[in-house]
Image (cartoon, rainbow, N blue to C red):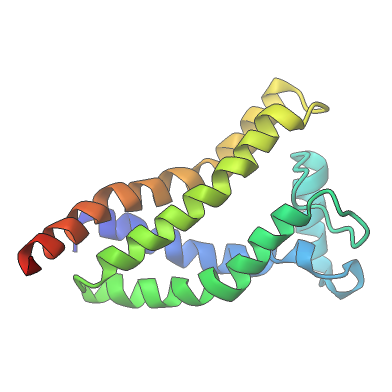
Length: 161
């Protein structure tokens, strides 16, 4: 197991509870969000002024973001468990999966960070930096997955040619 595999294991293992306790809450009606998770959501949206994680059934301006959260529930969450299994086993099959997952997540994080940087005008630079630091690892680590897994995929492909 490489150092990067350990980083990826930490990323996926930590992402499971984050997905369940934080990321999926905006998909639920406020009445269905358990009290402690509502308090956590309130902290994120009021203290950190996170514009994306607001639980509000009537908002339509963030439908694009909620569609990303739906993909996280349907595709990514099950993949986290599969990725952990592949990584813990040291399977060479992990590389194509990590490359595909990483590319998917990078393409979702770019519009999130761009919206935060350029379209959210009622936040201070400090607030935007705090949010960028919170969202940043979810761009950086998947980008690293692509950069480190793609060469393995290409090398495997070259062996079969």
